[in-house]
Each structure stands twice: as structure tokens, then as C-alpha cells.
Amino acid sequence: TGTAALASYRNENREPDTLPPFRFVTASLCVDYLKPTPLGVELELIGNVVEIKGKKVISEITVSANGVITAKGKVVAIQMPDNFGL
Image 1 (tube, rainbow, N blue to C red):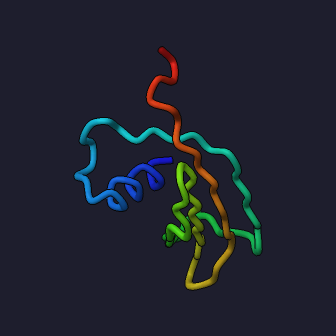
Image 2: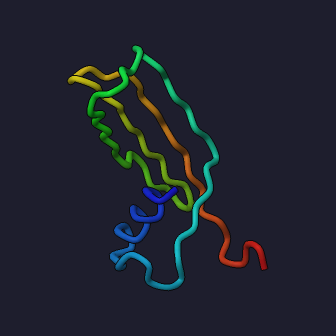
């Protein structure tokens, strides 16, 4: 959800943490485990925002160990209304 918030600030040409804040919740999380991820090695995570449409932000990420992709994920984040929790 932090990725979605930062993408929204950038999409609106605003500095991060300016008001009103962007707050997101996870609407969907999908993880595909492709291979075992070894312990004790450096992991590389690469994420990209693939779509911003209205209050929805979709991002994808890969996890690699020793140059081999071991997992892929996709997150759909939805912006919370300004009056949420009031």
C-alpha cells in the first residue's frame, strides 16, 4: 500500500506526505511461488506499478535469489476515502 501511495503522489505531481494524504488498503494479493527461495542469500525484489486507474493502483513484484526468480506477486490497492474512520 505504500507503493500505491507513492505512485499516487507522483501521478499527481505532489511531494510525498503532503496533504491530503493518500491512504490505501489491499484489495487483492496474489503470489505465485515458482521455486524454493534459499535461506542465507541476498534477495532481490523488483517492483513496478503497472496501472493507476481512479482509486485503484496495481503493482507487480518479483523475488530473485542468486539471479533466479523464485516468486512473483501482484497487488491491487484501493484508495481509502478521506473520511474513513471518522
